Image (tube, rainbow, N blue to C red):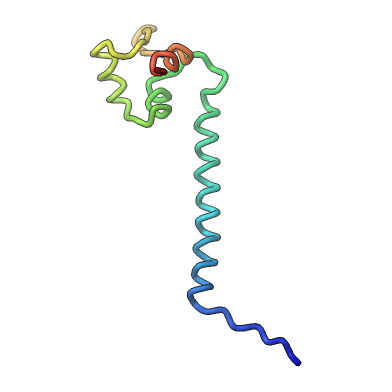
Length: 93
């Protein structure tokens, strides 16, 4: 007897394509996330943009917290900077 494979249904083909696309997309997201984190690993000082990216907020929110003295920071000339380890301990329970 001949073994006949059943033809793939359109739904099966679409599922396979979607699964492959989602896998590729999630891989890209992971790579971007890792690159973003590596941009300040090993450093002890963060800029406002880096702090905002780390806490997934906008720079304007960080500026508001600075204005209210709600976030520990220091200033060098016109730049606001944050010590990474103090930042983490400040937000830890």
